[in-house]
Image (tube, rainbow over all chains, first blue to last red; front, side):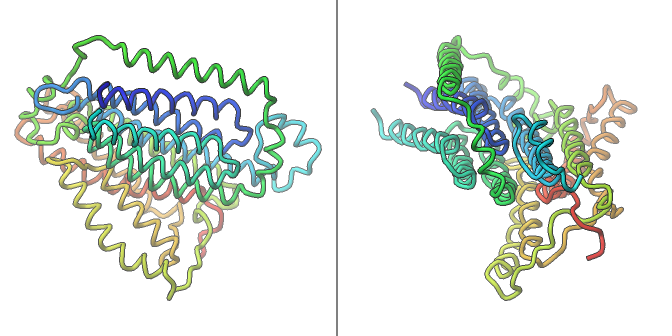
Length: 113
Length: 315
């Protein structure tokens, strides 16, 4: 079993764990965390593919590496936007839940809107 | 089993344990801490995958800025945690989700283990064209030359993210300063750390950006460290966050994409295609783009962590 395949299995498991957290966690921030975990698993899978493409004196194919760096930065900006939306939701509605939001709003005074 | 393989299995085990902790921890704050440590271990995994540039980016963004952003959010959401917990789905639904996730993970693992040999690669093409830019780091070559379009559009995505975060602000704070004014003891540990660490951090950040042309590193990695230093100064209360309607701030925000676009259009006017660098000037042009990019990315990342305006511009 090569180094790359150990990390490939690990990355696949991270994607599975992230997907589970995304589906099951009731809290939006936990969903954001889980989605980041899922994304990191996808990045590592890409890294494993890059490692397999080692050639021409490079230990790892540089094209997937560059794409992953771009991906990490874009994922971070998406996370920042999601967190900002979530904190604003808390500010406006006084709660930070996704499920049955309409019923929660009718029963509570929508302070600060 | 060799020692190296055992080490890798231990690293993978740590990573998986932390990933499971991130999902299973009861308290969100604890989960976020787990995720930050996971980011640091992930950086080690990238080192072992021979992707040092990615490792630096992951350590700086995944382990650093992401932690700052998510820990801040977790602290503010702590009070709202309990009501949301009541909406946890039932056992049968959880089992179904677990089955689905396990299937997806197993399918991915099978797919990646059964990839055809020899693996397809673009490394020879990257090596063959490396001389055209005068840069020795193949990843920087890809980011700044071979796939420069991606990098330019990513700058635009970062800018859009800042616009998105700002547009969430309540109307009466439009043009104001993001976040709360941090009040730290000026004689305290945090202020001391911010005074001592920042000069070193700035040097490291600029060095990483500069050396990215020939060694692992690059504009993103350097800019992320610069952003972290800026955030440290703001958190220690040594400087206030800037008001979002400051003209200088906005100019710095668009400097990166603007220089990139100008060089790209220059390529259209004087060269072969959009973003085609004239061979004789490839390296100076790339360095100019990177210099503008470092400034813009550092400011953008700092503002993304700082969040939308929450008070008026008056200090």
